[in-house]
Length: 452
Image (cartoon, rainbow, N blue to C red; front, side, top):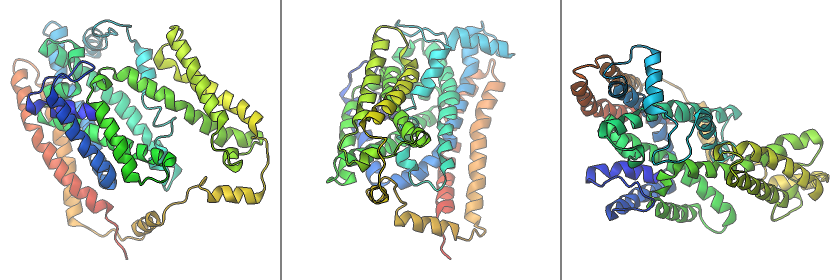
């Protein structure tokens, strides 16, 4: 996501799109280093503030995807429907098959069909959900139902947003007369949304990479207990920024993210077995910690064997990479159950052993400062706040403006489309800036604890 953000920041500096696996312009490397420095600094110092800012960004970012797709559909229709505009859903379906989701990979390669795309939409975020990376953020949630918020990222981000991104990408390629593999996220967003598109790509990169670096810092700290979190996060961020200088992480994004999800999702299968299946079979949970083993060999072997099987299936073209997570998770779960039975999960432990395990951190408790914040929020009095109400009204009005503008472009498509589209790109930044100012004020006011 640092590379994706850099693909937008490069545009004001006149840096060409970086579409090879290595950087072609030293200025792009400098942009990546600058973006990476900001991301790492915020991950170390300002995670709470950034998280609040991400809440403000989310509604606007989804609207930007919808706005870009609506505004560019008429241009795509003119190119694929012999100058006609969309009149029925059948027309849209024709555009989709001819100009957007053709199944053909630019530059050759194996065609990607509907089921591959649907499977990828799941596997690309399995590292967060099934791989339990989200648990680094949800571990102190007040309710288990907060975990369902991940569905917003999945169904709105990985379905709705991707549909809109496909429309914008295909339209941009047709308008510029370039192949899709010669475009990057920043170039597509600039063509569709102007300055607002650049802001959208940068924010999307920041709001994704910062919590990921935060999670990485927590994970690495587990194996480097003598290091403070800021130092671990700094090292992880430095390595990440170095890798981000090479655009292969963007040009090979599909395979990269699929492998990322494939490697981490078996961890979720192991935790699922330990948490849900073990009690049903009368086995002992957390038996590895209670036996004081440094390495969980059943977990490591289960993961290794399942990944090896996945590689064999992929190399022999038995199963597509995007489908591998299904047999891998199932095989990992079965292997972990069998290996645990052999290694000692049947053993029963005394009450004293269970209490020691609890003290060693198997069941984390909410830190004192979090309890204070929760108590302050629950004991606060929500009086009438004029600033809160006014900022909230402005937020809604500016979001409506961001939606009305592309609808206007879509409805008035015709001989004046080019002029209306240019006007849309130029003035979209106005409601965008108003939204962020009002939205930030609203978020600060609504989240500010008020003690009795």
